[in-house]
Length: 92
Image (cartoon, rainbow, N blue to C red; front, side):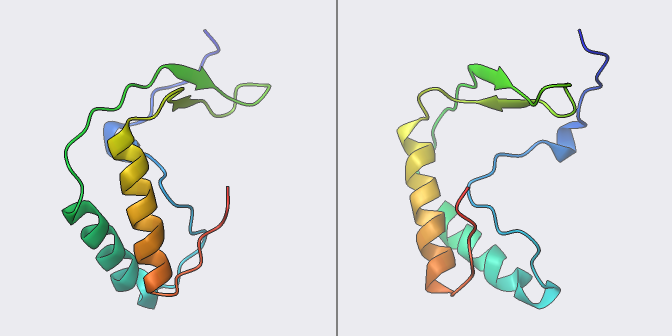
């Protein structure tokens, strides 16, 4: 309705931890944190049932009113693994 365009599927993502700019040398630590957190996660289904965006419609987002318990557990595990590796996570 606002003249936007769809995001290519390869660019879609779910943000579980916002790291900001990460030095290339730290990427293996980030990847290891993600792999460890994901290895302990049970499969779950996420239902995106909320949409929004800033006034003017520059960027749209989808969210969950009631996130799946598995998503919450994965988020907590990832936060812990990033912390174990002393990687800074922005609180957003």
